[in-house]
Structures are given as structure tokens and as C-alpha cells.
Image (cartoon, rainbow, N blue to C red; front, side, top):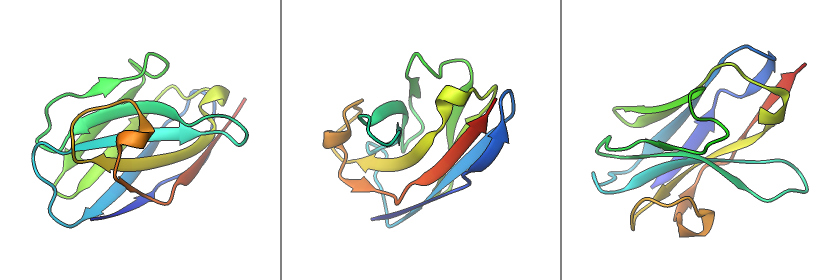
Length: 120
């Protein structure tokens, strides 16, 4: 399985951005796709997950109501609305084979990360 994240860039506060994670390989419906983010010097933070079979999704409190995760074919999307400067981070998609988790160390495959910068 390989993951390719894209869609990052610069956006003004209050704006929107959609990230994509293209998944190669054949995930099972029980596998879970997660989105995480990390600011330099800080710990990686869970954002959201969705089962490959589209059950879920589940969001961190910090993004609930603003972000939406969805899957279409072999691409998982993270739609980010009402962006805030504190959403600035490198965003990563990841796949877990063993079930849903908010812990990054329980994910088996990772994309390369895409930078999102939100200016005030």
C-alpha cells in the first residue's frame, strides 16, 4: 500500500482547502484511513479517521464541525472549512490495518505530508 497526499497550500483564515490522499493497493473495508497533522517542534496530532468501508467518520474536537473526511474510490479527502491560523501544519494521511485509532503509532502506512498554511 502506498499513500500520496496532496492539496496543501496557503489559505486565508476563514477559507477552505481540500486535501487528497490517493491510495494504491487494495485496502480492506475494515482498514482505517486517518488524517494527522504536525507543527514543527510539536507532537503529531490526530485529526480524523474513516473506515475504508466508509463507516465512521470520527473527528478530533478541534476540527469537529469544520472538517469532513470522505472516500471516493481510491482517494480519501479531507475537506477543511472555516480554517484558522492554528490549523497551520503539515497534514499526513495514514492507513491502519488493525482498526480505528487516534494514535499515530497504530497506523501502518503513511503518506509524505502536505503543508497547509492559514494566514490571519
